[in-house]
Length: 253
Image (cartoon, rainbow, N blue to C red; front, top):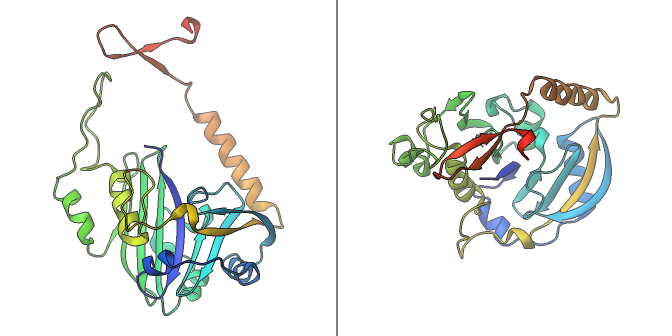
């Protein structure tokens, strides 16, 4: 799986009708909303995109749209490992409406999603195989129930050696796609449904949003450097004559 998302939305109830009927939003209005969710940050225009290719933007980039009945942001800084810790200014921005967060990252099999109704958190789930269940607040939605009931176990990958049992009762990204479908009306991977949002046709305004002090950028660079330092050397596998995956050395390439 290669799915990644970083979505935060404010909606008057179900966001899917607003996304289905989306028209091109006004850039000035959308920029004002971006400044509201990133107070104190420098905001400049960037290249526009669509929901299809901007659902997980690069660092310091926000994509957004302001629609009738909904505001949608694609921004990695607006999604959290623990959604319940959503900052107060974002709760205020969504006051009186439904707030929806959805985040996936395929590299670490991480999923987080959450829903607030009129400021009250009603459901939050965040989990990954390495981190376990970081947050599980509220009653599961109907689309979750088969996963918790053990109907989607993670099987072994054919040919791979020394596989430990998967540490979760289901794959987070599989549930993540169902959560994305239920909460936003589209999927990243899998066959599209005739009723899905036309993500390629949903226009988003692009903005470069940066910390003017440079502190956030410096902390991020240090975090990336530390991750590279602690990361082990890459391992390469090839299919062997017996159909199993076998590790090979760089010298043999």
